Image (cartoon, rainbow, N blue to C red):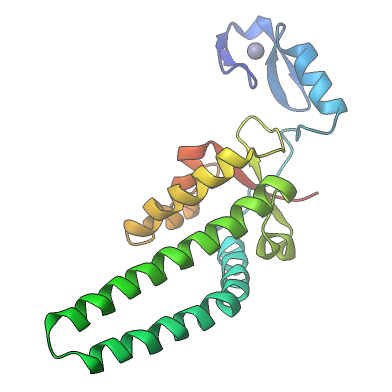
Length: 192
Ligand SMILES: [Zn+2]
């Protein structure tokens, strides 16, 4: 039994052919060749990007985002301080937490807009570009849809919520997938 790379169905060994190192069924062969020709498909000969290079990419993106989120954080911190000083009742404290919450949501939305727009248009955030890595779909196609890019951003929250173990999974996964890669059917590879 072999699995066709495109339709993901099982076939007898004799019914699949090997193209560019990938198993493809007869029905999917024309589609496969069309995608190869349009440059919308990576062959099987790619290298998955490992844990540390992805950490470096994340740090670069983090620094870029920090230049935007830091002034916003500073501003909300200053406003919240005023609230706490002005009020001895619980109201000041409530306002403080609400502002912190808003701050977190704004930070997340800025990060999400940043990563999703770069992933959907260039296949990589500036941090990933600097590291020579990119995100592709599990079937080898290069173009990440905007919906998937946004979904991946939300899935990353899960990876963070479990003490970043979702990211750490890259270290032992056979295809170096993070939890959000599992959920969104994406892979991170070295650019050619
Ligand atoms: Zn197929």
